[in-house]
Length: 495
Image (cartoon, rainbow, N blue to C red; front, side, top):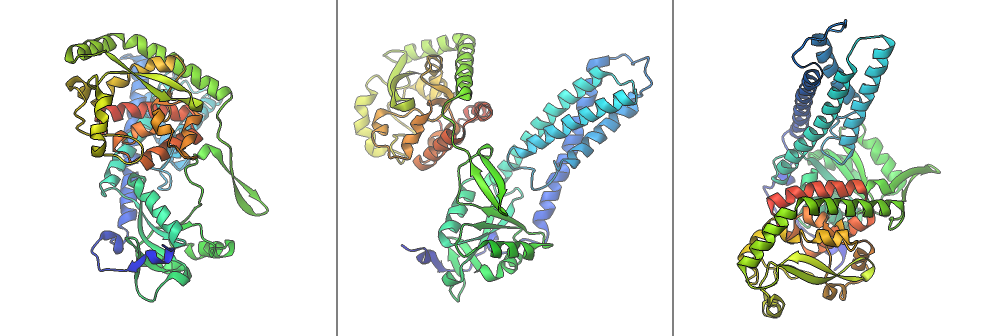
């Protein structure tokens, strides 16, 4: 099938994506969200300053100082908000997207703390250093937590179609347009809603067209007009041979003053920001991509952190592990632990430990259930697997059956965070790309765990595992571990 055959005649539709929204409605939603962030930040900072005062002075009134905290505290909150504004922490291009929002919030707080310390020393203002230290520490952490909570609420609203999102006009050839549309729709919480496409003139028929279910609203000759007609606030340009550097530069000029943003979506995907560096060379913004790191000092640190945390977790969870073992033993005949051969880093096989959640002859019964497999790819999954015991269902719901894998982490066979440990039968059918999962140690949890677990398709699960392999970091590991608690509590995709 050629790319041109993907175009089908447009049909009349009442979908909101086919018609522009009410004038300014998207911008109004953005401004409303930003205003709510300002109110949230002001509230958080006021509480942080009060906590700093109470922790430093208690109920007593500070004496021997010419500073009136009744006036200084509100001034500090106001200065903090100004600092957040100065570092563009309320820019609608920043809020709700990526780690840059959190980084800017922390930097604004640190800069203000440094400025207050310097001014206090130079002007010899008698402000308690303990009060400032506690206020800034509590305020900075509280701001990050509040921003995280606000973003999660925004993501949930976007997933329901209720949160503000950018209305995107995608520009490029048919193959790259479809790929970008698929990528953006895979994660609707990111806030990019595709409302139309512009394709090369050679593929544009004289009648209205659709590219999949995306309306084709014009060609490369009228991109600004097409964006205005459908109420788009963002033009996303994908890879296309006809979009030369000169045409892109002119497109940027045409969009000046329209309020429409221009973004470039290169063919490079699934590469994390820290590995990407843009360097101007001969007037060209060349993107340099660093190679993935599979050994070295960071790997040694990761191994030490894994083993240390697993030892602490095993010690603290010992009573819980004993209670689970007793429940498994009393519920059904067979051993408490289930040891299964899995494939680890470099293709080396090892025995992974789990609490037994199935009947003892589960492997023998698998052949009878193969036809009832509910997932694609190489894995076998059933929501109502008859081999799972009553206690096993409870353990799987809360992922408690995987706690013995802490022993595998302690032995260095697994990591706390990594790709899902595959079976030898799965590895035997790996192609060249999927085999890259074996470049790192498998993990107890990972991106697959916090993104839906068994609800994920085989393709999405592999994509997430490969993304982790290429872009792992200690900071990302800590984030995944934090998100794992939420995934376990929600028990989505656990069966």
